[in-house]
Length: 231
Image (tube, rainbow, N blue to C red):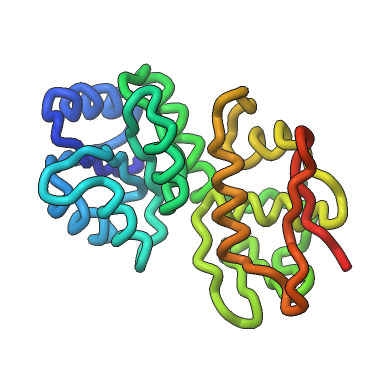
């Protein structure tokens, strides 16, 4: 049973979400300000956090920035409906996914389960393309450890970024369609106005950096997808 931390100052919403999630098999705890939410998120007692942007004492963006300094706890960020900037900033900072308010509780559960599957799922030997540990360029990937290192240094990827990197490296030198990446990495079909995938690719680029010779690792193929380039 996954334990979910809800960080939102709307106590009525927290109660409703907690009741719905309990029916779906989750256990929850809610806190109503950013400072206390950050302390709880750093405790290691939760499998995932639901984080609102607008919070007293410390806003959601500040909480996420501080959390990402030391923790890979999956975070689903709640944003204002129609506010693209909140979504973009949240994803840039390191949110695994976002959901605009007001939201359908069934979609919330679907998003939570999709993120948790990425974090918790054991490797599938029948579907794996790469061995348990493999190397492309100067990147070494451990599938069992869900980690990637460049030149011996940890890249500190989120769950989404790790799965995205593996999907691109498995097809290095080939274009991977955005629709295929969205289904594999975000566990949902690509929608016209959802920039989540693009933001995760952008974050991954920043963390990987260019090759030692300054060539670009991940290129965008306009209107099609992305390619991890090979020399």
